[in-house]
Image (cartoon, rainbow, N blue to C red; front, top):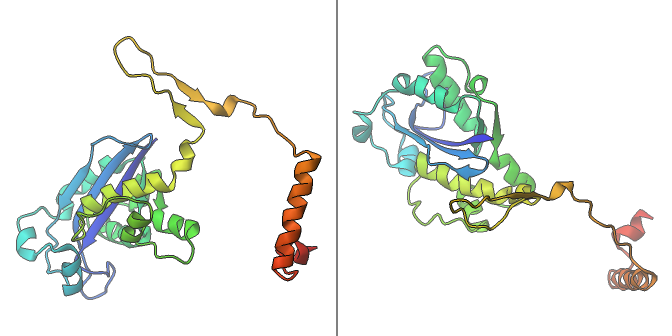
Length: 236
C-alpha cells in the first residue's frame, strides 16, 4: 500500500479569508510503501505573492525575501497531484492543510485535493482516540512515542512530514503484529520468507478450578478496598 505523509506551511491561518486569504509557502511529502520509507519524497518552497503574518513567520521562519524567487503554486500543481495520485494521505490536523490545498488547487482550475487520492487519514483524530485528554501536538506525540525531534527548532514541512511518518508508524505498530519477516540475511541465493501467523489456530486454555478461585479472591479483596463500589458489583 502506498501512503504519503504530507505537511504544509502557510502565510497565516485563514485559507478562505474574504479580503486577503493566506497562501501556502511550503509543501513536504514523504512516501511510505508497505509502511516503509522509500526516500521518494517531494518538497517545494513556494512564492505566496504576499508577506507572512508575524505569528506564522515565527513558526516557520520563511521570509518574503527567501521565498521571492521560488515557484508559485500553479507551477508545481500538476507535479503535486501526479505524485499523490491514488495514495492514502496522512496529515496531522487534516482540515487545516486540506483547506489550503483545496484553495490553491481551485485557483488553478483543478478539483479538490481528495478527488485525486485514495483517502485521507488524520493522525490528530487518531491521537485523540488513543490518548484522550492529553496534548496531541506533533511535538507532544514525538515525546510520548520517543521519536527524536531535537532538530525541530522551527516548523518545516518536510521535516514535520518525516517526524509524522515516524509517529504514525509508532501509533499503528500493532498492525504488523500478525505478519513477521524472518531474520535470515538477505544474501544472494537466500530466500527471505514471511510467516503469516493469521493462518494458525491458537489453542484456548481455560482456567482450572484453582485459578478461578484465586481470581474470585482477588475480586473480593478489590471490592472490599473500594468500599463495595467496584464496577462489576454496581452493574450487577
